[in-house]
Image (cartoon, rainbow, N blue to C red; front, side, top):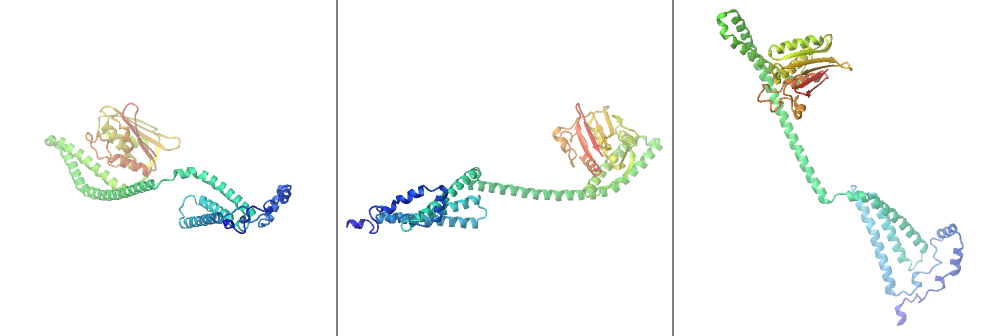
Length: 413
C-alpha cells in the first residue's frame, strides 16, 4: 500500500545521474565561449539530466497537478495572442499597435516556458527551456521599456465619456456652422435682391429727376431775368440743391450695383494732380463755404489714373471733412510722391473723430458711426465706394484719428 503513494517508475531519491560531478567539473573548466558552443551543440541533448519524474519524490497528484497547471497556462497564453492578433487585424484604428505585437511575442514565449516545464517530466530539455526563458526575458524588458515610453501618450488618451462629450460638442458646432451657412446664403440672396432693386429703382428714378433738374435750371434762368419773380428765387435755389443731393444719392446707388456686378470700369489717363485737387476743392466749397482749405503738394506732380473716379474719392473725403468738423475750421489736403514711386493723398480735418472700435468698419457698405447717424445725413455708401475705387486702382486706403482732434483719410496709388 505504501508504494501506491508514489509513481512506480519514480524512486524516492535521485540517482547518481542527477549529480554527474565529473561532467559538471569538466564543464566548469571550459572557457565561456566553449560552454556557449557546447550549449548550442547539445541544445536538444537530454543525456545530462533525467526526466523530472525520475528526480525527487513525485506523488501522482502532485506531478499531474504541476503538469495540468502548466498545460492550462500554456493554452491560455497561446489563446490570448490569437485574440490580440484578430483584434489588430480587424481594427486598424487601434492605438499603439507595436506594443500589442510585443505583448503577443512576450505572451507566446511565456506560454512556451510553461509548456516545456510540463514536457520536462518526460523529456528533460533543460537547455532549450533555458534558451526560451532567456528570450522571454529579453522580450519582457523590451516590452517594459516600450510601455514606459508610451505612458505619457496613454495618460493623454481620452475616456469614452470625454469622447462622447467631444462628439456632442462637434455635432453642435457642425449644426451651428450649417445654420450659419444657411443664414449667409439667405443674406446673400437678400443682398442680391436688394442690389437688383437698387439698380432698377436708380435707373427708373434717374429719368424723372433729370427732367425735374432741367426744369429747375430753366426756372432759375427765368427768375434771374424777371425781377417780378425774385421772391421765388430762394425756393428754386433750395429745390436745385435738393435735386443735386438726390442725383448724388442715385449715382452712389448705381456705383454700388456696378461694383457688385464687377462692372466698375476705369478710364485711366495722366493728369496734373494739383489741378484736379483745386477743381475738386472749389466744387465742394461752393456747396459749403464754411471751411478753410489748405492745399499742400508738388504742383508738377502727375498721376496716371481715372480722373473722374479719383475726383470722386477726394470729393467724398472733403464732404465728410466739411460735414463732421466745426464751421470756420481748417481742412488740409496734402499729396506727395513716396520713395517707392507711388502717390499718397490725404485729407485732415479738425472734427469729431471716429471711435477707435469703429475705425476698422468705416469702409463697410452702409456703415455709419452710431453716435453720428442721427445728426448727419447720408446712407454710408460714399466711403465704401471710395475704397472700391482705390482697390480697383490696386491701391491702399485708410483712416486714422489725429493726435488732437479730427481724422485723416488717405489713399495711396
